[in-house]
Image (cartoon, rainbow, N blue to C red; front, side, top):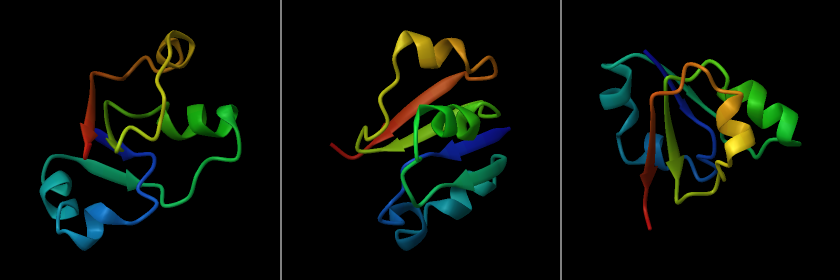
Length: 79
């Protein structure tokens, strides 16, 4: 399973020990910097089956979702 954290700019997953739990489920890619533009965001997310977004920093609209054929789950952490 491909798991992507597209917006962990504060490295919360690493600091609070959550990466190990995710890595037990599949390959994890963490982005600790914002994407330069929409095309880069799409490139980062395209392989993802699961996206874990931190505090809903990444907006998912219909156009973006249409570019993510493998996506099965979006999880939002924080409030």
